[in-house]
Image (tube, rainbow, N blue to C red; front, side):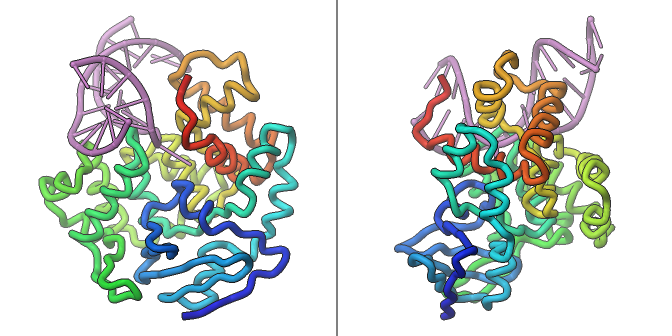
Length: 285
DNA sequence: CACCAGGAAGCAT
DNA sequence: ATGCTTCATGGT
């Protein structure tokens, strides 16, 4: 068990960070967050400015939660109006975690036209069936499956993981990733728009999923994923002439360009704060 | 039973 | 380029 004390400039809210839906492999049990990152089973809790954890060292935890990123400065840079200001006050301390590219890509292929609990279920089922077993501080856990393991999976077994029509997309992506082990570093080396196009070459990865992977795994903080909630919020708050509930490709393009211009190079943080401040009780209409 | 959920592909216009 | 349909699943 390790404890670190956060510095004054390391504003951090563990609960907000892990419950906002960016990563799918954490759950809170009896005051502790338990999760799997890479091949580590981690247990962590926060008491004021102290972080206590097991299953990983301080450097790993610091890197995963990007604790050395200057969050106060980022929030100042995106704080452009009362609406985002309220979201920042409500969610201050929320950080984007640094996910692994393959897991993030596969997870967001599983996230189309569905909700977060269902994605968690799919990812957990895939890990239990195809992932490496890990002995951690909370019994046996399972790493997210390597591309090879999912590429070799038979389609019926994958469908048992409740992937539905997404099973073929995951298998195809897994086959590509196992044949091109350097796919992630090649994407990481590209400029933003080219990296985005590269991700959208995967079947099952459209604009939204690509932007999520760019933001959550590749550190492209200008990425601005537009899901149904963000579409609704942006239409109500910033672009009132947007009509309809369905987000056409042209609307998607307009929203993300607006966000990049308006919020700046950390537009992705603005997206996450707006999304998380939407309020769990808020109903559509 | 209808409707929705961190969408995207496949076609027809 | 834009619009409609379908896709599989679980929750409400």
